[in-house]
Length: 261
Image (cartoon, rainbow, N blue to C red; front, side):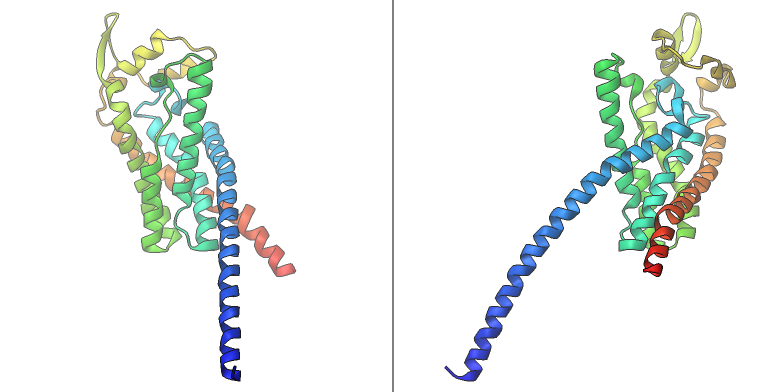
């Protein structure tokens, strides 16, 4: 065998070995990615849900508290903080515009598991009393704006405002049947309010109901539009709070560690 043929055979063996090692390491990388993202889903979902509970609380729990005055204002601010933080980290680390969607999916799954197991199976409350919010469509919009603009400033303005509006639009489909006016004991109230009166809950601050009186709870009127405008402004503030958290707790410590070592 000539030297050229031997060299070609060696190159072929090396190439075959390289492809074999590449497939093996690629398989290990895929397994590590799956383990990482599945494990992170519990942390991300819990962080997003806890943040919502701290700021929104009962406004996003009971059906009769999902009103058109406070729910569109407080909830978008509460649920955009963690998606914004993870969006900032993923975009700087991997140029993945998927942080908001990933957080939304994790949070919705955690909420459904909690509502079904804790409140329906063990608590005995029907799911139409404690159904969780939906924010996946709003999160898709937030990531899409970042993908197209590649700017956190534009995403914080256009994306966050649209986030609050789309949040109400996608949840209004679920909420609309409970906003219908009904005659209950001589009073005109919504079907959601009738649920709250029919099923008593312990340790519920019912006195806060005084913030909405008369027909505001029965007919939307102009209250909703004012609430959406103010909620969109609060969502912008929540977006930049999430950006600050990501920079201070993730990006800045990593940058200091890499610079030092």
